[in-house]
Length: 55
Image 1 (tube, rainbow, N blue to C red):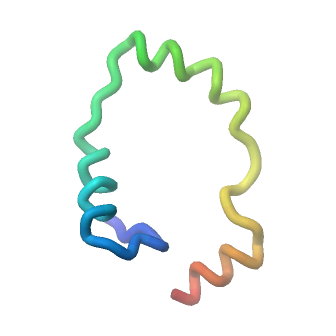
Image 2 (image 1 turned 45 degrees about the vertical axis):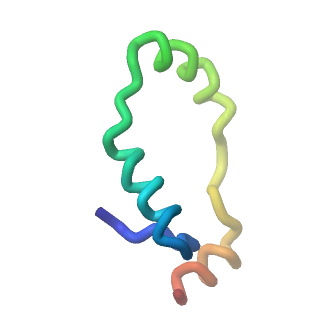
């Protein structure tokens, strides 16, 4: 397991960890697949990435 920057509460950490157990069926994957082309770029700006890296 890896830490998730910005996670401040134990409840949110538990939610994030529970996502590892999530299994999507073929129907869900087929519904999500067309959306993947809409995901572009970086999650954070360079300045925010540097801030997150500092801790």
